[in-house]
Length: 387
Image (cartoon, rainbow, N blue to C red; front, side, top):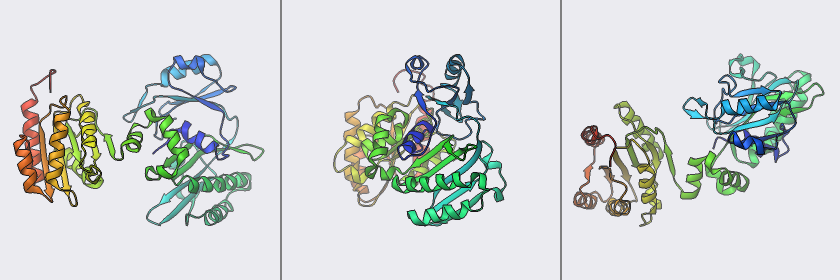
């Protein structure tokens, strides 16, 4: 889960990471009730993306009137397919030098990578490679702190103490929270050597949520900001709308296979609506998961057909097909044609069930996609009215 800056900072602050005082505002009207810190301020659009400053979503304000104007202009601003649904209004950290510190899980090395630089800010990615200090260490606190100390030894004295302190503190947070990435950029280093997190990026591991009560509580309290992760926490599987204007709802299992299917559809000029890993082993003879998925897909305003793509190992396709037909009967609002591509255990029984229900069954993807395209063409003339 890629935390919004406000949530990342609040989480880090619980671990003693110094952050500017600030508050979250989700509407213009809420500004009147917000407990603003002392000014001057920085108004920052909350989007889980980099490059907010260059996109105009980070603005400095010297008066309440400026704060209000920036809140109004930033809320709802689109950036790379997303929108700023909230702003963080925080105290301007004042004059300081910028540095950088980051820790990320390096899967290829089977270790944690530490990255450090005495330069930071919006142009960090443009720095020459020699300006970035990096090394890997095992995911163990002593090894990570030793790595931080080795890197900090190459930094100029003016910023060495700040980067050393920040790196050692973040190493502890990284391990305790089972993070995938923690980054402070810029790390503001003041003239007296103290430091504060000017910006923060934290990516947590969704699979660690059962072991992370603080992150889980944050997610539950801010579910509207993280709908996909909140859905997974509540229902136990992945569902993501990948294209709100997509025409093909997907009922699929296997994360890799589902992503591959989305690529195949797009390569064919088709527009999938959602990603899904239904995890058929979790159905356990019960239709609730399938009913939920059908309800969610039915909310897609332009969805015109449902494509079911299931590769069965342990799952019996005959049983799955019976559950699917039962789920369709339980969701009368779902009035889309269904195309099924099934491969694996229990295929003959599945064919019998689906044929009786009037659902086309295929074992080859090309045939299933051709059937999907026929349904799309047949419904292309329908504008409005029931789908």
